[in-house]
Image 1: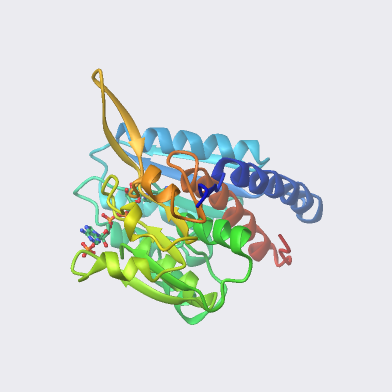
Image 2 (image 1 turned 60 degrees about the vertical axis):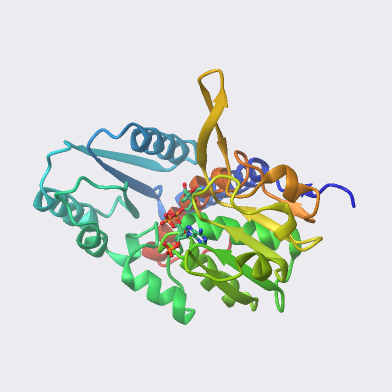
Length: 294
Ligand code: NDP
């Protein structure tokens, strides 16, 4: 069997970002203002700083207004909640993103709950989780929505396909399973207590791995021709004191069996920020009472 097709997340993300930029221009013409995204960073975690910078750059590249708010690592929960209240009330801000994780003195759940659901472009609030669950329009977490877009682009209609999602986190696994269910897949959700995981993966037409363990899913688990979406981002030793990023799937093994597979890096990762841009544009349309057709 020939090697799997490589799903080029970078190219998909670039196309989505270009589509969002067009949408921003059309929105600005209709609404007389540009959409705005506020990103809040508490503390100085280096990885979070990189993510926040990339989000700000992507927001500006799409023609939207980027508002960056930084609080010191020792900021209190009350200070952060007061900032969120200001952003909730600010008509120039369509989307609010609080970069996680937060310092230990701040309760993440309370912070997420404080963001107005219509500005919760990360889709983490209970209101948006509920909307996804019952099929109402809301905001869906960016990473799983990006995975669903890659799958639909590759496979078209997903109805009737057997899908397995490995991982059940609130930000990836659970919303991914909901999205696949909403697309009429038959969905298995696997986790650390799942028995006979390899057997279950072997039945799946779609495999989404969101585990956080390098090379966890082996090639001989994959059904020939299956579509494999690797969400994992794991840094491993590459020799010479260097490190490199790998996914949750043993890529070379899986590639020999699968029909299509996302690489790491360059697969799911680039889609996440592109979908955040899209969610912000959608939020702006809803606030302005304009239809979004993208
Ligand atoms: P979490 O650690 O929150 O969840 C991991 C999940 O994997 C849990 O549900 C856990 O099960 C399950 N798991 C752990 N060990 C096993 C096992 N042996 N067998 C089966 N399931 C297992 O991680 P996230 O969902 O936040 O992230 C997953 C991966 O995706 C990480 O590598 C992360 O870096 C990456 N990621 C990538 C993003 C991107 O933009 N590409 C965005 C977000 C995450 P249990 O619930 O039972 O503990």
